[in-house]
Length: 80
Figure 1 (cartoon, rainbow, N blue to C red):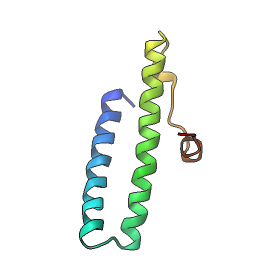
Figure 2 (figure 1 turned 60 degrees about the horizontal axis):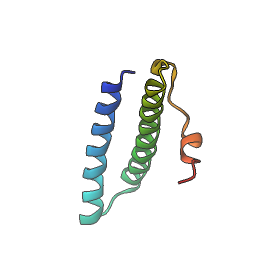
Figure 3 (figure 1 turned 30 degrees about the vertical axis):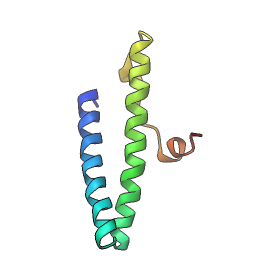
């Protein structure tokens, strides 16, 4: 996936996240919406992780296309 596509994916996920968070404040979320919000948060983490690693490879003079998206358990296990 190209970097532009990754950025578009991030933008779309953030927009959907904002809609769900606004709804959560106003009327609450049902179980499916809560599950979707949790999924969005993980997908955002995975996509940002991939974009950052691609940028790091590019800055190091390496081919960014060799990076692939990591599984959720790996990305969610990072220490902050």
